[in-house]
Image (cartoon, rainbow, N blue to C red; front, top):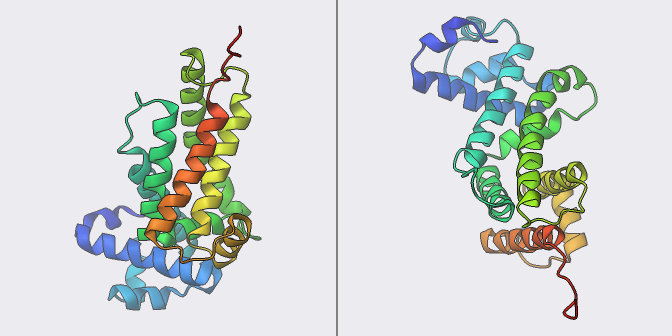
Length: 222
């Protein structure tokens, strides 16, 4: 946790510090990020950073958690829990794409936690963020299976994992050069990945998920 002094500074100054830290960590990674460079971007003395955080690692951990919370609010903060699974899936993909295109640095921080040497951060962050989304998806799927609008022969845990995995790969493809090439090859994309193209890809992806979830109709002669 940061020191209490972080929350005593002006809100705009605190926001500038956290945003610039997120951008710099995403750009250079934890090890190559220099606290002096960050202080210069924020417009404060390097020593001032240690008035708010004991170490660069503590700052990094807090920025990652802050970014995950911003992402969660952008996607789930405007989601109505009473919506059915299909509408929720559409909302999650659309809102997720909007957030990632506006703030790619937070997704980069999320994916960087999977890198070599970052296990100590994964142990502190991954469980809490993955539990939230996994629990939400499984709960909605079970509810709608009981209501008969999602097929009841599915493995709920595997379906939730599949939907979220598609989401992560899709969003990563919007910010990673490697994954963007991968998306182009697999989906045979030849034009620009501009907003209309991304929206069309979201529709393709969510339509496939819908079809996977829809109950199988009985033959007409039954």
